[in-house]
Amino acid sequence: MSPQVNHHPVLRVRLVEIPLPAGSRDPEVLIDWMLNSLGLIRSKGANKSTLDGMGGINKIMSQCFLKSTSSGWTAAEISDLTGISSTGVHNQLVKLTESGLLSGINVDGKRTYMVNGGSFQNSAELIGINTLTIAKQRLRILSGHIAESQDRMEVPAENETVPFRMNVVSLMPTSKEIGIAQLSRDLGFDGDRIRFDDDLHIDLMNILASAHKPLGITHLMEETGGTRARIGRILGRMRSAGFLERAVVASRLDVDIFTGLLRQYNARGSDWIMSRGGLSRFPKDVQKSLTDSLERGEHSLEGVEESLEKLTIDEKGLFLNMLGGRVPLGYRVKGATGDEVLRSILSGLERVVSRISTISGRLDEVILKSD
Image 1 (cartoon, rainbow, N blue to C red):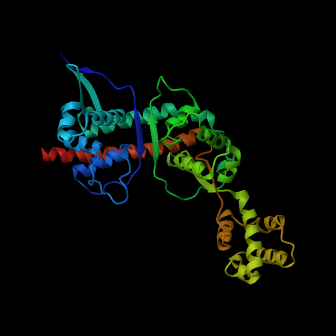
Image 2 (cartoon, one colour):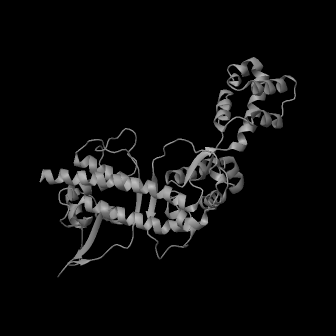
Image 3 (cartoon, one colour):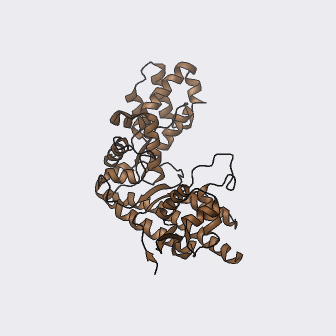
């Protein structure tokens, strides 16, 4: 009986940007890196190295598929060789095939698995093609959902690096909704513990997609009723996917400087504000107007706004920091248009896919030399 290919209809993978394994050519280190980049390994904890306490999925890949990438393995053979229970093997094989790293065919009624495409380089290429294609198709809905706004991008974004992390999932016939709500869930914005009665991540996506300026967490708490901790976690996942970025909430700067000036003047006086408070860094007319209003007891938000109107956002942020305050940061979608946001997300995805391709090629070279 000839083998029958039974293509798995589902792609379910979490692309995670992690540091490259330097110049390592240890196959177990390289396969562990790939499994982590595909989101297939749970955190090992701070005190465990790559090879300490090797998990089931590492054993399957190291003891079976590293030894033979193009030969077929049945679940029973994998269980016998690794000592992992048949249920455990089945669960790991489901994850490995859904990620695209392995493929399966039916041979004489037995499900047989191999590295997808017969090599790790081929499997990486297939993962890259499929994830990018599915992501582009699924993310098209964002283009029409995000309000176009040049005002939103007026303030420069914070200069910070956030490692990419996002789920890519095929649209399933069992999906409850084919829209922005389902997309948000499939991208992983609601976390690993999915609760279909919890729409906080959807509310946040809708609010931020229509906003014309960066929004702080306090504002988002008032809009959604969510807690600071939960909103912060969801925003963190959206930032990791390249959907959001942080920028200064310019409208809050003058308010916070007004409060900081009054607090420090009452506690330390105008001399401290001039020296340690950083006011001496700014033009003489700014210094005079602020200190005069404080000493006359006429300190007001309107007066502060007028005095600071010539300063840049960076200068105001520096002044606030010198006064002991913290620059108010908000969140905004990463682009003035939906297409720009899509490019931001796909850029991160392409970066991770490229890294996986590089390491998979190195892994094939190591395997070839060891044969």
